[in-house]
Length: 90
Image (cartoon, one colour):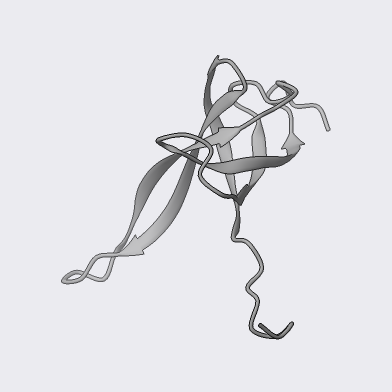
């Protein structure tokens, strides 16, 4: 396979919905979708399970996750970085 044909892993930004599991966070991603008939944009949410090895992310944090190989039955994402803490810090 040539260098040009390799795809970069998908990276998305979302908010940590839950951090109650060990080494796993649930990230909720909100996206606007255009209604097929009326044309109005409505919000749709998707929740992804992401691997958080060090336990850095907390509920409410804005995070960046990257697609990875299957880590468990539902976990196919890895935490890249915490962009903004929930308490309003950097």
